[in-house]
Image (tube, rainbow, N blue to C red; front, side):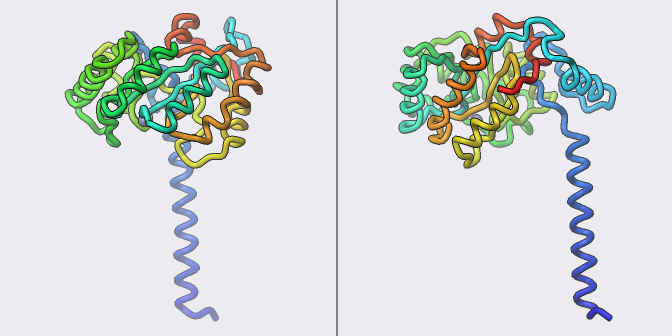
Length: 277
Ligand SMILES: [Zn+2]
């Protein structure tokens, strides 16, 4: 017979594993697909609904439609870089983008821009797009009440506009940490913003090797596509030449998010073709 202590430990272990399995399944079932964009005129509720019907609809249309069944599915990719600007990484990133002749979209933080205004001006001068990533990058953005969301967007835009003049500062935003609720989405929409999320998140916000970033982007490529990347990551800069070469070899062109939204109907971003690059 087992000693009671051992039996208790075994029971505890089984309970722990069972709990983790339940948590995993619940997470998988409850997690809504992230819509890559929630445009000003869109029905945000339908896009982020966790109702069974909405999820079935999204699964069917997103996962199983044959490639190119819905129109052009142009091979356009918009690289987006969140946060900063930062004094070391952002200039290196800009050097690399210039070398590669790739335009990108930068979601800048108002307070970081105040710290390094010359970098924001360089981003603009080199033809990239600048959009709003709030004034202070609050960690709990999804918990903010509508007036606080509005204040973050209004004050973030005002700070950016002291130094740069891209109209996208007033029309395109990305929530800090990609965290949102229906309420924060609708508030941003009411404030005149398209909420820009992504089709692919290669995870460069954690410590991921350049090879992992590239292989993730190859595996999860869609046409068209918005990619979430970060301004302060050396591994991302390291991966860029290979990413650009790979996507160009597969027939992709690099564009800003604004250009992408101009060229492609939102429906194609919401239901892109899945491709292997
Ligand atoms: Zn951020």
